[in-house]
Length: 163
Image 1 (spheres, rainbow, N blue to C red):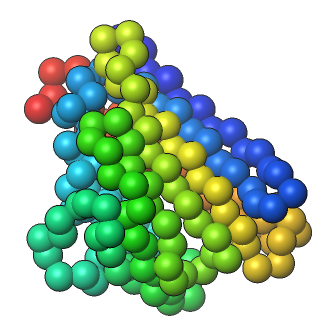
Image 2: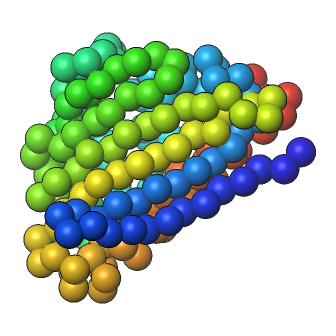
Image 3: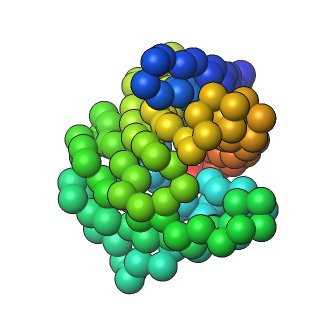
C-alpha cells in the first residue's frame, strides 16, 4: 500500500499559502475523529517546538472553541491562541490565529474520501512580519519541516491494520 504526501508553497499579493496533501489508508470518519481530539496536536507537532496546550481540558472541538498554546520558535517563547471558525464534521474545519507570531494564520483542514482511504488537505494562508524576505529566509523553511513532520506522524498513526 502506498502513501502520498506533497507540500506546495504559493503566494498571492496579500498572503503566502502552504498546501499539503497526505493520503491515509483509513476511513474519513476515523481520520476526522483523530483531528477532532485536540490532544492529538501533541502527536502532530515536532518536539523541537516544545509545544504545550495551556487551555483547560478536555477541549470540546466546535465552532467558536478557543485553544491556547505555548511553544518555542528558534528558542523564543511564543503564546498562541486559535479559534475554530468552521466546524463541519467529517468534511472540514478551520482554525484561525487570534494571537501569535503571524500577522495572519488561517488553517483549513479538509478530509476527502479517496481510493479506499482519506486524503487530508492542509491549506494555510499566512502573513509574517517582514514579508517576503522573512518568509523566504526563515518561515517557509520552518513550515516545510513542521508539515513534513506532521505528514510522517499521520502516516505512522494510520498504517494499515493499526487501530
